[in-house]
Image 1: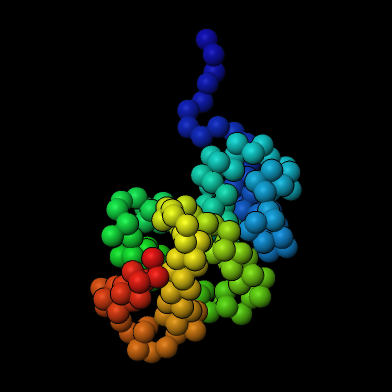
Image 2: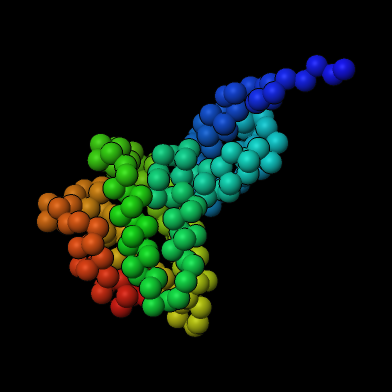
Length: 187
């Protein structure tokens, strides 16, 4: 008879934390684009498969390692499912849902940290802009995606990172009503 134990397998329970810390260091040093999953796995001393297991993707790893809820993969994935007509509302909903869930102090701390802001800008350019352009398609897709990221970035900055009272006081529905037309025009 074999003596098998039930439950979580033995091993180092801090593996996820070690991966996140290695990723944080690399993302801050090399940015989103310059950091590979392979490099994170090597720095953490783990197999690449563990990154997929714990974080799902490079985007998930980025969001969790830098505590940027807005960079978690599900939000963008969800926003990019559906018709183009509803894209602006889905993007604004993703932004308000994720950023409203983050403590205002954490948002302002991100603004004060140059490395985090550089990595976040790199993410917006390398991930959000590229995926939006792919979703939009057409000869001017990159220009429209660039304009859309500008609107979204402005919303994030004026509502969360360096809040202007009138914008910070808006409900998510009001944010969609006020920023929706500009985002739809950009898209």
